[in-house]
Length: 311
Image (cartoon, rainbow, N blue to C red; front, side, top):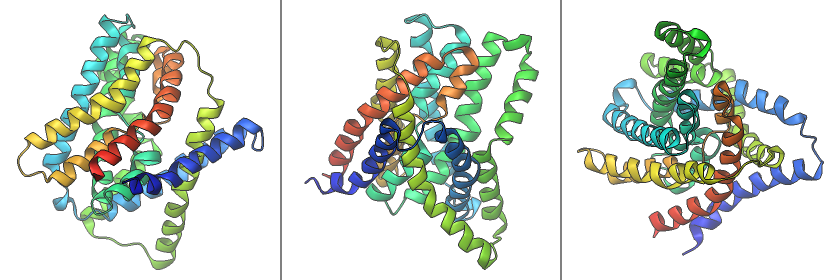
């Protein structure tokens, strides 16, 4: 009965390892930004490129799934934004970027390793499709809306869109995503030495990523943990996966395995650089607290979900 949890145990042990090394001082917290930079600039783009380029030609991408998952994520984002704005009184721009934590999981650092264990047959494809949704639709939409409604720096709609496009296209993860899509479209393959290098880097990415998750939790101070923080955690761990599952099950032609696999991705705690996006509108305090709380609670909720799906 508990075999799925035993399979997940290495993931949480690596997170605990990162937490312990930083909390005990065996690795100084000042090392995390450099390690994070290497992981984000090198390891993660290569991992994304590997998954997307190996997911098949663009014609094999399930664009119906991509549209449905995008709709579920945007619906979650909208609900979170409205509640944060009108019930908890966050400013207009702030509510959009903080709401992003309820609709965008840590797909690379946590979602992919968990999916490889729970739904290994579809993990690569789901990862590629969901990366398209998050990086090309959900994150740019939330950031643009936050800038537009706040009129950050007096920027017009056109200027906000141009700024978002520039930031999106300069994101190393998006560069890896676009490169993978290009290889998938053209059928190109890497030369053997480059391909072996790609495989080595992609193999190291989960280890570094999970270590960083634990390290960042250890160095993030909890401040002002109140109702909005737990609301964001509930949106991410409960509401987003339920909406994703509900929408996908209603769409004809999407297999149940794909729908439940997507639910696992959606149930993962929010992505680690969420705090950086929230800081654009002075939302880093609530975002950092929500990140820690959601990561801690996610160890329980994701395990429970995996047991339920496996049972």
